[in-house]
Image 1 (cartoon, rainbow, N blue to C red):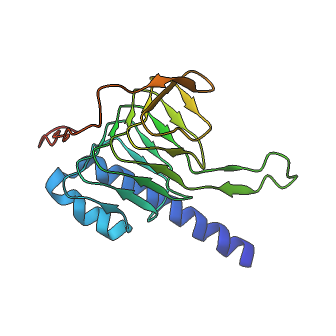
Image 2: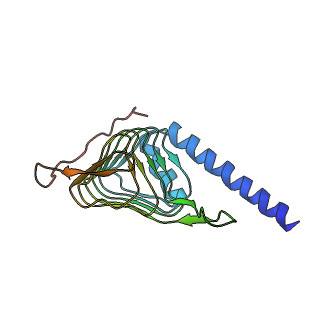
Image 3: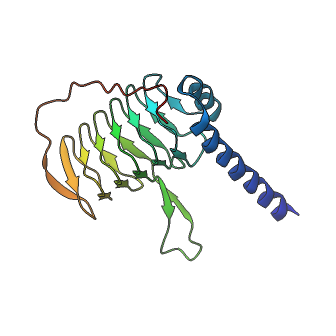
Length: 184
């Protein structure tokens, strides 16, 4: 009986998570902070998390001032995910904080938090794997798979991602302002 109870509890959790993801895409921006608070997310009021973003857990998510998370992004916050201020995450990016221990016969979970510092840019389809830290102003090119930390103001691309050189132009000072009432 305890096994059945645990199975039902797990099913109810994932059903609730599916409902959160559905409701998030339907709510107007003005009401989303209520959902974020109920889920234990810490998302700045000036940040924009568009509809179609998929959350993997309740809690363990921080999004800083002015950051923009576009449609179709996976935010795997099961192991913890911190996104700084003025971060631009393009559509269809995948950010993972949990995987599996491949050399374990039980295939156990292996969680490592992801940290994305201020002014980072992730272009479309980029993937960031568990435990990665993207330093301030780092740039991840489209389709790149980042498996290692990226130093501040460095650009990476490819699979696996490799260093492509510095991000030039000085220290970023821009403020992202992409809050459109009807952009879902």
